[in-house]
Image (tube, rainbow, N blue to C red; front, side, top):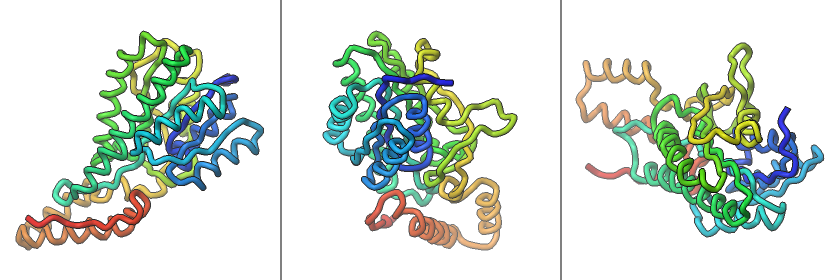
Length: 291
């Protein structure tokens, strides 16, 4: 259905979830793939699966907060695979924190791990595309679960704004910039997305292949929705979800002091961090500020 034969793609977050799904789809369409993840074993596992399917791929480990490492990643695609035509940046899911319990470290992680990383990766790959003079495709993928609000929604909103901005700047170089956003909540850790029956939306892999191909060469600066069934750890994206949270606050305000409510919210947030912080930021000790 899609033909990306001869194209070279860099995919960040390729170790699992949407990044893995997109990496496999691009390879099936004929692209050579540099599968990038901060965990070398995950990057290599995706690359190995692609090679076993008869396609060309290399694994590459880098912390996307390391600007120098990101620059080397872009050059490595050219050196190892012979070019750089497609860059897919999969933003990591953010730990959901209530405004009242948000820690400075969590906000810093959002800025460095998502926003700054998107800027550094896009710039490094776009500059390599300009050097090569062959144009290219840049595809930003919002974190699954962003429609539930919270910090992942901040990432998605910033991504849409940056997509429009960068599309203008890169258009003269025949580089398109588009964003993909899951239509259903989910999170890092799943191994597939799907075309939901009767939905009319493509899955992540098909959407990325379409944007990377010739059919979408005149489309840039847009955010495209797609369906994803990555709902395994939905609580990660909805730690204090909507109705249940509001009901808890209403009941607590009728019987408890504001200080007691804050203490309970802090306790619940710390329990959530204990479960999910190792996934998002290993070996980090959380420190609550004093007010």
